[in-house]
Length: 368
Image 1 (cartoon, rainbow, N blue to C red):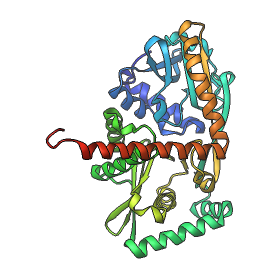
Image 2: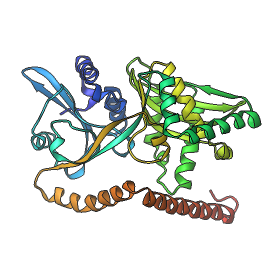
Image 3: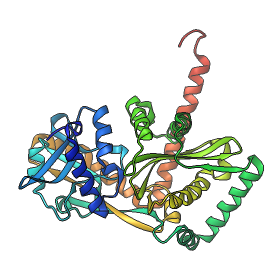
Image 4: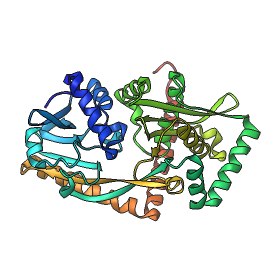
């Protein structure tokens, strides 16, 4: 058990080799570069190096919190986690926890079917993807087959946006930090408006995003995209990519242009640019918005579950987490409940924004 930053170059190379050898591990959140970035910012990041006969057989990145509570690397920020290991490697999961000094390990985006954790999976979910292995034209044909009405509507709004606000221009892999700041400001506003916790209120998450944006290599990089109408940015996305897969992370748009559905317009143009850049797919992550079902042309699978060793800590953790997890599953399984929950959160966001504005108006001059 070491910190990722303590891995030598040969160990990092082995990590990359194992990841490339297994298509199910083709996700940037499983890359050694992401583990290294997390380690630079968080002191609870660890990786178990698994050896067999003097040869490294795998790596298990994780977070070790107080009382031996284990969490996937990146926790709520990521959409994929698991063992980076030789195909078919099966460990005793509880022995792995013991070696890592963990009492419990909760997961909700595990690569489904990994032999070490398969027995502890309580639910397996599809993660929709845009698949370009047959080309962009084949993908857009699938989108049209999924819903010809939606595609027709978005293409109409796309033309309308260009006609009324300025000619559209799409930028792939922008290196401009100011463009990233614009996107993160939109995302923070979205979190507040919809009643969610603003992730970018935490400085370390902003720093992580900036570090990922600066990453540039053939196997791993941050990809910032932006759609412009004239010279004005209207919608964008920041995600991470391997050589062949882009993972959706932070999409957002300027609400001034909401009537044109700029987010979906952006996604269509991002898909075309991704295919032209040689990517095989865009992983949109499990759950969430209905647009994913319309844009998908395939699915990957991730699992939820829990491994624990007998202890008071594990028992208390179970009592605190299980009711929440079950409630979340019930809501996300039923579109009608999901829409109601979404409306409630948005209403809360509006109230919170209104109270914040009133407080700002009433604040005496000179007090900051």
